[in-house]
Length: 456
Image (cartoon, rainbow, N blue to C red; front, side):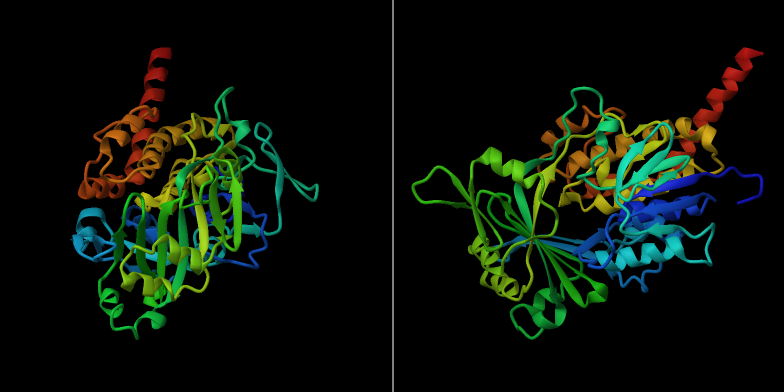
């Protein structure tokens, strides 16, 4: 940053992937960034997350070190029947660096979080180190004045406020038009999440051959049932996501559905259950017994894998319709707060990182007087892209017609809906946030130049 460049005091609400990524992007262009996180980071937990090429290209430019973060290469994919283990699809990603500028990786969330935190706060990097304030819950925002109030009554001001506060953020009413309902609703499916040390699986002669299959493995059962399996932490840990219908168990002779969450059974009507699930976090406890019962028709080999799970979490898969606006005044929503994703495309973290990168690119040499105009440009770059991926994330790749109907209603959507795995890869991974931001900046300069010419 040169002495003549403009800068902002920036407030970021939330220190997850979206918040820390934004902190990195904005410190790199000279802004003074403070992050307010309501938790204390004392109980950092999580499963794995995918870092596809569109995310990795950005992270590497920021100085992200793959080895330090213990990333695991996802060099291929296998899809197989869950009952017979018969392969249905095998694909290699060996050409991804040539096609998309990076390979596909996976990371444990804690490892990713730690690396982002380091890049945000380290002294020997571009810009001023980010300040992270823990146990600092934001209870009120004045978007026009650029002021937040914390639970302890303290007040903080900034030229830009970035809400990276997740799907259950409490401030969306500030940007919603009258009548838009954004309550998260159940998709009718949930996902088990569990981790197993690689060393627990290798001694089993039936399981060991699957450990040699590189990258991502997907075992497909009846209906929406499937088990997704990929490594993290440099191959030391195996990550599992088990997607299944919520309506797994019925009380005999009773029309009321029976749901099990951990050791508890909840007998409720469907509407009441949906309301309950809307308040459920990603770390709800479940049990190995429920996991095994849910997938009892899967191959005995896969059941023996699941028997190794010690801690099982349950993630209700909730959907929220795309927003019509992400900003008001000096406030912008990003990441899951703006566009929560379901796991089917593996793009939730990547879209948050794209959001962050776009803010950094569009807010270089920007002062308080420029914020409103740049937030409009930001929406122009990101709303169509993230909204489309958000809809893609709801459906399987064999439901292109349903995807097409949904996506074409999104403002700013252009292009052809992907119809197969290769086309989804192209669409997800080829999009370049750097060129898109440069395009809208060039258009803005041209428009200003034309207006100045007309006024002469």
